[in-house]
Image 1 (spheres, helix red, strand yellow):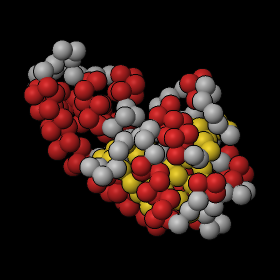
Image 2: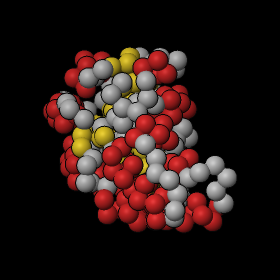
Image 3: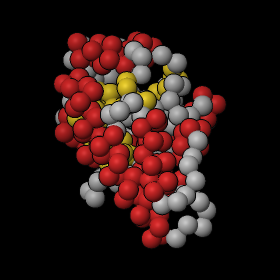
Image 4: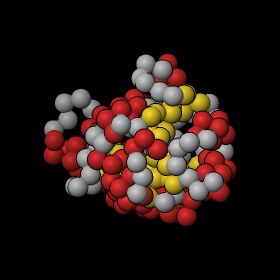
Length: 214
């Protein structure tokens, strides 16, 4: 039995894509750049908002101009990250079931730390025990820093924990952290990609997760 579950955030617990796209396109428009489609933004996410912006600006954009887009994006996203973002169907029920069984939970995301904590507190409250995002002291996934920090705060062992996510970055993070990996198919990457990485399961619905832990 696993006593700790570490989740990715975007594409795993929350569908954040509409708010990310709106803030990206707002920033691009302010700087005179063309907007990006839903599918383009979907492909750009997963490695933190800095890389999201770098992928969204036109090829050949100078760093100073990309930095301006990034600053406008983050200012806009800070105020608009909760407009359309919602938990995926079944996520609240899964978290409630984990809590009822005394299973500890954490979020480790490549989103910047303040946004991760804000969304976790607002949308999940006490159903999430620890939330860690990218910061100056926590390297982005697939580095294991965030996962290891969360496990330490929770007093959990690697062998008793599992990492759950929707992307290749998440699978690599689990491997680098020494955790088993469960992939989810409702997020931003396809099942065929997840299947190329070591995993104990790939699931299509949140209710499939709990039986894998007990």
